[in-house]
Every structure is written in C-alpha cells, then in structure tokens.
Length: 303
Length: 328
Image 1 (cartoon, chains in turn brown, orange):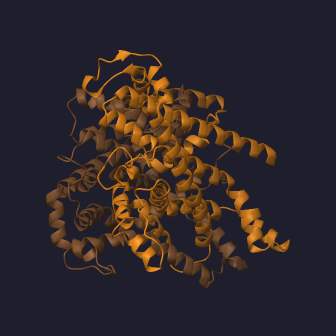
Image 2: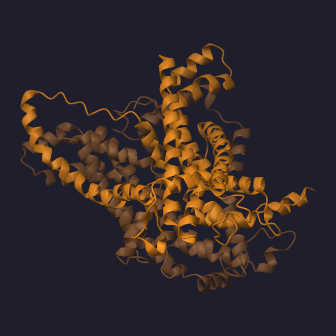
C-alpha cells in the first residue's frame, strides 16, 4: 500500500466527505497563492473550448448538408438540416433501438455491479473469514488483466449458448467489477463504525438485516458514485459489445461503429448519428456532472 | 470489462499484497467473529460466481487456446501445437509492427497528456470563480465514448475538408494527409486519447494536490521559494505516488488501445491503415481472431499484451519502492 497510495490517511477521510478538502483549500486560499490572474482564466477557458469544440462541431456538421460543410470557409453555426440528417442516420443504423439497448444494458450492469460490489466490499471491509486476503488479492490482481485476454473464451461461451447478438451476452460478463469491490471496501472501512455493527448484532439482527438496515444506508453515497461511474463506463464499452453483437441488435457504440462503414460515407449523416448516440450521456452529464466530478476526485484520494 | 480508468490503479497500489485487516481482537470477541466467518463467504459469493465464470475462467482458457491451432469456425476442436503460436508471433513482422506502433502511440498519447493534466490541475487548484463549471467541462471528453470521439476527430483530421487542414491552409501551411502518414496518423490518434483523458487525470491530480498540507507551502514561502520552486519542490514530490499511479493506468490503457485505430479511417478496417501504419496490438489481436479467424494466434497476442502490462506494472512498483526507500 505504501508505495503508491496517495499521501492521505485512510481514516477520517470520509466522515464528512467534503469538509477536509474545503478546509485545506481555504487555508491555501488565505496565502497569496490562491489568487488566480487573468492568465489562469485565459488558459482554462482555452482548455474548456478545446474540450467542448469537437462536441459542438458534431452539432454543426450534423446540421448541415454534406455540400455545406465542405464549403470554404466552413460554417461555424448550426443549421437547419439536423432532423433530415437524423432521419438519414436512423435509416443507416438502428440508433433508436441502440439507445434503448444501451439503456437496458448499462442499467442492468449498474444495478448488478452496485449490488454485488457493495456486498463483497462490505465483507472485505468488515467481516473476518478464512482466505479473505487471498481472495482480495485475486480481485485486485485481475484489475490489470487486459480485456483482450477474456474475449476469446467469452465468445466461445456465448456461441455455445447461442447468445450471439443477444443483450445478456454483454450484460452478464460485465455484471461485476473488481474496481467496484475495492472502491466499496475502501469506503466502508472508514465510513462504517464497528460499534454500529456490534450494536446490531447485540440487538439480535440477522446478518442480512444488518446489511440492509445498517450497511446500505451508510454506503449510499459511495454506491451513488459507483453507479454513475459504472453507467458511464458501461454505456461507452466498445470492445466486447463489438464482438458479441451485430448491427442488427446493437448498443450505441456498436451502431456508431457501423455508421461509418457505408460505401459512400456521408459526413453530415455520420455526425448527426454520432450526436444522436452521444446526446443521452451528455444530458445525464449536464445534470450529474458535478457529482461525477466529485466522485472521481473522491475515488482518487481514497485509492 | 471493468471501469477502465479506475481499474488498474488499485492493481498497481496492491503490488505488495494488501495487509490483512488488523485483527487483534480481545478474547470474548473472538467467538462473535467466528460466527461471522461463514457469512463472509455468503457476501462475496455472488461476486465471485460471476467473476469466476466470466473473468477467471476465460483468462485461464485463453492460455490454453494459445497453445492450439484453432479457428473461429472450429472453436472446440483445435490441435495442440505447444508454443508454436508464440514462436510464430515473435517472428511475425505484423506483431513487431503493432508492438512498435503501440509503443510510439502510447508515448505520444501519455507523456504530453499527463504533463498537461498536471499543469491543468495546478490551474484548477486556484481559488477560481466558476470552479465547478471548469471542472465539469473538462470532464466532458471523458464522458464521450471512444467511438463518438474517434468519428468526430476523423472528420476533423480529414484530408480534404477536415477542419484542421482548413486551419493549416488558412495560416499558410500545407494540408496534411493525416490518415496516410505513419507519424501523422499516430499523432492524430494520440490527440484523440489525449483529448478524452487529460481532464480526468487533471481531476485526479487536483484531488491529490488539495490534500497537500498548506503548512508545506507556508514553510517554502518563508524560505523564500518562488511559486515555480514551490511547484517543483513541494507539489511534485507530494504528488509522486499519484503520478506514478496515473502513469501505470495510462500505460495499461495504451497497451490495449483498440477503438481509436479501428475507427480512425471511418470504416472499421482492422489493418490499421493501408500499410498498418497505426495498427496496435489490440487491433492486431482483433484482426487475427475476427477477420482472419485464427483464434489461437489471437490468444497468443492477448497473452503477449498481458505480459507487457505485467512488466510495466512490475517496473513501476520497483521504482515506487526504491524511491520510497530513498526517502527514508
């Protein structure tokens, strides 16, 4: 642990999640270091523009005809052809179905991952059982195994089960995540006081009751973070769905991959399709962005 | 299959096996813990059932497959060839081409990215107006999928009407056929990776920066250290574990690079350009298995990728340990 863990003590990091960070920032802000100049704002605005521009360009290119985006100088404002291009994209790839599929797939994966990882994370954080260290080591060790190492047997498996092109083929293998277990364990170690568990036990609550009415309420903030990150990752998952599904029953990413493979790729249509497939996450991100940012930063310090 | 980014970071951290939870229970408590004993298994069981079926078993089976001459159409009936696939792989120019490309794209995609992320985190660490806005906007590329990002960037890098070439010509430079050249295509792919991940890594650095005690800066200030000196001698050393960790994560991601080179030409060809100029190991593995139907070869490539990752993680763990010891 000592080698790579960020220089933060594990305990007390979470009790009031935001408090320590805020206090520290305040202290730093008190010194002269805290005052940003116009250069800082200019640079940050520049980075923000670079971050947004490709997404904005999707809208611009997707709302013109092919001829119009090829003009010099190129257009920089959205135009009227957006819905025509949407329609053309929907004819080329079943993006509507893909979005529905992706909601289903990412939703199931999120529910499964959060549930299983909270259960296992709790056991690794608070329960004593033989072989715990070995099992945890196993979980953590496999986090560095590349996806490529799993796809061949997985493909054989789903071929055998006749699951090719079926959604369960992409849901089941992704239903758990080693990261999730580790994430929940780290959170519960410090956030869940042993006294609370002891009290529940003294009151005669079954282990399941203890989990449901003591562990879950405490774990809820971390579960929310894990849910958001898992959904995002599952929605954007590319390699395995590309192998397991075809464009007849795709997730969004598989549909997008098929968009460009027409004989005469139409730039504006591809961009409109890309926009259509990306819009759902962008909407979610606009609403939950602040929480996702917080979750990533929290996870970083916890690790 | 797991959360791509978070995944490996803990792996790196865990290189030394996790210390067993402190157990020095008083006598009477011991009995209670024994009753908990079997419940531990019940809690981890659902996770491990799925995990064993869809992760552990496949990893092992891939090793088995890599020792066979197997095709996709004849999935279970391969012939045993021992290490022949590995020998072929090491003699294959395609493998070395892909390995070389993976290395160069990996360097192009991670080094500038992490440097920029560090600088960006430094800027974000000021007491900013619109702090949440800047952080959220910078994370938007991370929320964009590889497929979407690559499709957009392959338009931007287009030879004839691409916006980047239009801009180059506008300032009097020559247009570049980004996709056709070796260096140019690799730079373009590195740009996509950098665009998607810089903001994310900046947030990781920012989180670590915020936990540096303010006293360190105050002391440095009293000693008369300039802002730059403070960054160099206080911020960077404090962030070292985090930096090492992001290096490991980014490198592991780079070894597996797949979607960007697959979609960069827009049409999902597995060759990685006309002369394989941007074919990566991940793409080669896919080509061997799902374009050429040589499952055994693909399994071999997958194992080679894993070996490379192990070496990288190992080297980083050793570096981390040596530096730690040097500090004490």
